[in-house]
Every structure is written in structure tokens, then in C-alpha cells.
Length: 316
Image (tube, rainbow, N blue to C red; front, side, top):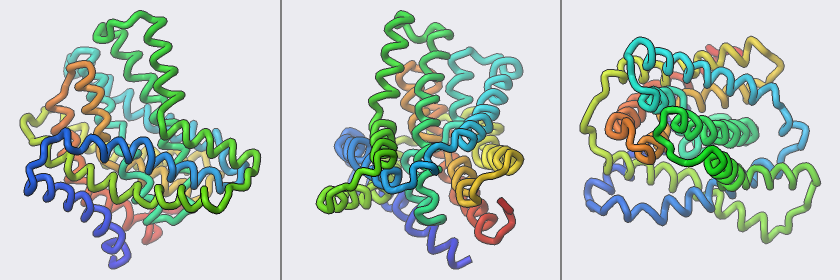
């Protein structure tokens, strides 16, 4: 149990420090802009490049792993979409954001730091693959569904170009692709470059978690959606269970890879869900509430997942 506490205390402690700092200093939300820029465009891309480029290339080509993980994640998305559309009678746009709230975890900010702390550097490759390819698919699905719903006024050609640009030039995806190239060509990186990348990557987890705490503090709980009753258990409980069952049923994966995927699936709703809702003026306050509630409850649920992994309760 002490091992779990030693993992979670610095992790959630950084979020708490960010939350308290925001409440005490009362800085405006815009003050966080440059830190977010550093995290998204420098620190996390450096971390992904470092981990992927120093991994044997054959480990980077497990299409069966990422396909199984994505299928499990989007099974949650489809079920939530069906509930919202045909049970709750919500609009197509509302259903889209609700479904992302239950299937899109905070894998970019929280995933790398927690996974590497809990599982070691062997978890680096599955984490990078999931973060990049899952984000890429979300970047395609969200605008496509919003276009069908009529909330995206761009022409089909413009929409396709914008989607391709967003996927191809996203810092996480671009840095991982460069890592693939470096690993595939077995490029020897100069020591100075390695030290520079190491220096940047070490800042990724602390800065991201602190920024997340600040974001939560600046996004007060104004409206609790009725849908929270099934979105929260879907995200924090059902999603990791489905991912675990899918990967163990297919089989043939390194246990560390399975545990990394389950841990990422157990993470709370991504802040990007609010960003998507804000972009299309759909379900904004309720998305914010969902992020806050799932993040708070994830202290318990993520702890439970880690205990299950460390105790051997989840054979992989």
C-alpha cells in the first residue's frame, strides 16, 4: 500500500498544488497560456521523441495492440452516443460531446507521468502509441460528427484539409513520428541533443499536472449534468474494464503494455472535451463539470486500478 501512496502522492499532489496556487493568487486564466504552450509544444513532445526514438523498432509496429485498444475505447463512445441519442433524445452535437466525455481520457497530460512512475520506462511505447493514435482519431471524429450535426459550417474540402493539418502537425503526433524515424534508421543522437531532450522531457509531468490543477480551480462547478450518472462510471470504471478484457482476450501482449492501456483508460475526462465543446458552443458548462467531477473521483478509482495492478489482481 505504501508503494501506491508513494506513486499517487506526488502525482495528485502536483494537481492539488496547482489548484491551491490558483485559488490563492487569483491569477486570470490567460496567465496559464505560456505554460500550456511550453507543455504542448516542447515538454511532452520531447518526452515522446525520447521514449520512442530509443525503443527497438519492432516494438513500435504492434498494430494489433493499438487497434484493439481503439476498438475498446470507441465501443464506450458508441454506447454512450446511443444512450444520448435514443434514450435521452439529445441532439447529435450534444451526443458527440457527451460520448467524448466518457471515452476521451486525459491521456496527454496525466498519462505519461503516471504510467512511467507506476510501470517504468517499459510502458513508454504503449503510452506514446495510445496517446498519439487515439488523439489523432479523436481529431478526425469530432469535427466529422459536428459537420454532420450542422455545427461546423466549413465546406467538405476545407474540413478535410483542416483535419489532415491538425492531425499531421499536432506536436504529440509529429514528435512521435520523428521518434519512429530515428528508431527505424537507428540514428545516433549527439550527447548534447540527448541532454537537451532529457532536460525538456523531465519538465513534462510536473508542469502538466500543475497546469491541470490551475485549470480545475479556474473552472468552477456551475451545472451538474444529468448525464453524469452514467458518464462517470463509464469513464472511470467501465472503460478500463473493457480495455483490459479486450487486450487479454486478443492476447499476445506484454503485460506492461496491457497495464499501461488499462491505466490510461482509467484516467478522468480530458480537458480537450471542454475545448471541443467550447469550439462548437455545445455542452460547455456540463463538459467542465464532468472534467472536474471525474478528476476528483479519479483519486479513488485510479488508486484502485494501481492496487489491482500491483497486487496481481489483474493477470495480464
